[in-house]
Image (cartoon, rainbow, N blue to C red; front, side, top):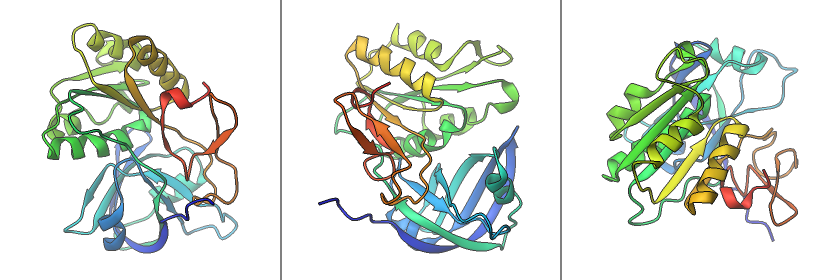
Length: 264
C-alpha cells in the first residue's frame, strides 16, 4: 500500500518577493509549521491567487529555511502565467502552500567531499542542500551553469554557504567558463576525488552528468522536474520512466532519485 503523503496545507504570508537575475525572482514566505518540517530537496506547491480559472498549483523547491523565523526562501523563474502572477505578489499578501512534498536529498554519513551541480533555476534545491552541508561542516564544491551572465545567480550564495570552490559555466561564455555544467564537472573531476554528486537543472545536463558519474562509478542523485499537478500522488501526471522498467512518481517517490534508477 502506498505511504500517505506528509504534505499539508499551510497558510503563508509574503515577506519579500524581488528579482535577482534575468527572469529569476527570490521569494521569502512565512509559514512556521512548514518551516519546521521541510527538508532539503523536498518541494512546496503554491496556490497563486489572481486568476480563479487557474486551479493547478505551482510546485517549487526551496533554497533556504529559517526555523526560528518560520520562513522559507525560493528562487524561481518566471516562465508562464502562474509564475508571472507569483512575481506580482507583494509583502503582506497571503495564500496557501502544500508541503512538505516528496522525498529530498539523501546524505550518507562520512560522504565528503561532495560535488554539487546546478543548472539554471536548478540552483534552488542545490543551494538548499549546500546550506545544510555547510551547517554540518561537510566539504563540498559547486558547478553552477547558466545560459548567460544575466541569468547566472548563486555564486556568492554558494560561497557564503561554505563552498570550497565554485566553477561557473555559461553557454555563451559571457561569464566563467564557456560551455555547459557538464564541462565544469569534468574539470573538477580531473583534479579531485568526490564521494558523490548531487545534480539539478535541465534534463539533458543531468543526463550528461549522470553518464559521467556512471563511468566514474560515483553515486549520483538527481532532482527531476515534472508536471506535478497534485503533489501527493493522485493525478499520475509526473511519471518518471525507470531503467529497470515501469514508472515512479516524481512527487511521491522523488523528486530526488538515484541517477542509476532513471531511464535517460
